[in-house]
Length: 250
Image 1 (cartoon, rainbow, N blue to C red):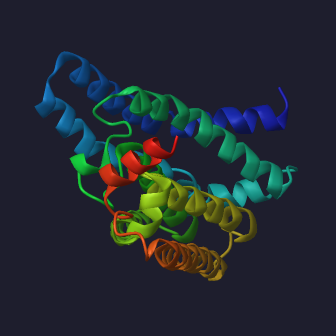
Image 2: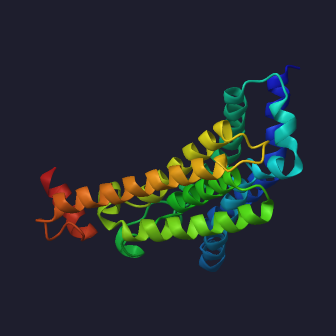
């Protein structure tokens, strides 16, 4: 077995317990939705972001804290290739859960009027939690600090999405949260690749903060640009009216 295959198996084994938790919670929500058990579905929906956050946290910080990052740095495998293996393992573990979430009527895209403007739907919120966890995992050196940083990032990201109403109007349900989560995943991958996690350095923190600043700047800039474009449309922030106008135009 080649070194690349062995490393991929290692990453999959590390992430498997978290992927199982994500999948079980998503499956619970799906079954509850099909059976009409709203209380169980609501509980699963509320708990799901924490499982996605845990999956993201498992990306790098366990190796950083245990010294595994130093071991991996000495292997005859390019850093870019190692980062690609981590991303491939994360994608393999996340896709089943995301598929279940997207299939669940109670979790999938719903009319914005049902939960209020600016509130990210479950797919977007789960991707945001995954991105927040991965970003915190790439920046922190201990599990405790990564958990705290991940919770702060998740809450801050959800707050930023909730006030980015102009972009949310354009991208529809959960689109801003999903985009922000994906941006944070890209930042985490770049930090893992360039941050030299096996050394005592402030470089991972600097790279992570630079990525957060860039994503916030894009969020604010996009919201301002869309707001200026929609400023003369009184129905722009009324989703039912916006949908009716779009359907009438077709």
